[in-house]
Image 1 (cartoon, helix red, strand yellow):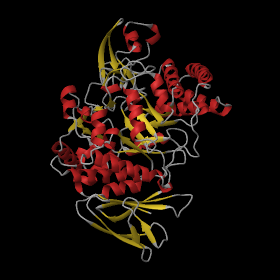
Image 2: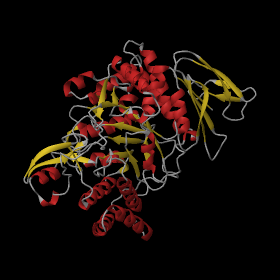
Image 3: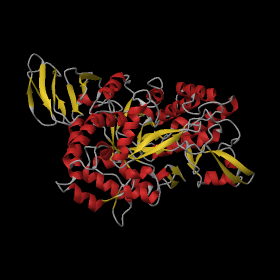
Image 4: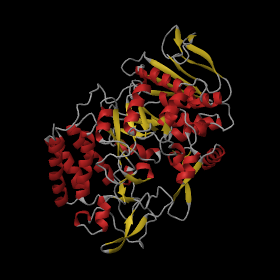
Length: 576
């Protein structure tokens, strides 16, 4: 396939709204050449009736999260996943697997190569034959050690305008700062000292999309990733892509237009490929990346879910979680949420601005410290800092270190049941699936708070624990895997199936999910977030004489279209 006349007109319109006519024309020519070059290199992706389904679950992992001596980590990971999670989990997000210089992969030295410490492209392509793979496109910035930036420093004309030179005396007070670090970094270049825009760190150099050659190179990268088996492309930190003095330089119209142009071009040769935007910001800004519901990202991260779920369990009260879930807009048939509770990063607190009071966030911070975690802060640009994310393993965030193992497992799995019940595609971090704990040693070794949830696991040790029925890993993994398996067989859990929040009492998070094509196919999800038993009386999911709790297998009588049941502390139920 290739761009048709309508698509060409749409892309031209996007480019002309961003660039002057000369650069827009140049870009259009180059982009058409790229499409022509890559159109025959797209893998034969499996085509679904809809772009996602209830059978889709994505595991989030580093390429070397599981290791075995003498073997390339990507090969170990592939083999381990085949042994333990296939076919229950069908998608894998391999966090940046490219050569890098810092930030555990998010400071990429070479976008087009696989880190030789992990393996080769053939390992990625082999995994893509068994799983829908998500690649990271870390395209806001590149490593200071990259050939691109080193060429710039040496005065290579090819890279002269690849980066953003800035006046250190200018006013940057409006610019959104994601971290408590300087926005500009001074570098010595062949043309003297220059101050360069570095949003995230001095090793992560922001790219200059005002230079059309950068845009061409990045589109080439996206098409290259597709040719290597990417079914999903995660646009990392994409909200910061376009910079404009006198603005916040986040979520600018040019950024949205760029994503829309990328989507049109990718759809022309690989319509099955999904763009997912990563924007750890308040909900309204986050969902703006759906665009019209058809013209931008197909999935956006559901960032309020992790902190609100944590808050519910720490307080024993699901009211704010329920009210937020009740306020969510319905997605279109071409969009949905990417739901998660834990990831390689911390638990962001910015997404709950306007939902939780500052005192409630402070209380959550205090609890995280009590549970062995850390807290990262961002620079507000006015000399003040505010909390940005909670750095802690999600299992440990939910439970005090002295809690009994069975209680930790029950509370954690109840939280994960909320994740699996929500409309959208669930993303599960590997350390959640396998019941990991805070990795304090890693924080001490690296000095970085985020390392607390980035432990590398020895395969033999991990498998030994997974086979030990007394271990926390076994208790979490065996039940978590069963929940995922149950979910994949219920059409009411289709990512686009409507969800209705039920306000039964503040201690129980309750959702009704309904197959929109077959309204009698319903599931009532109930999760007790408290340490007290709760009695529930509610309408049955459908007009039936009896219903069944899919999780326990228990049958419940229906009287006058009502069901009555008791939920133990931290018990979850799926009533069908």
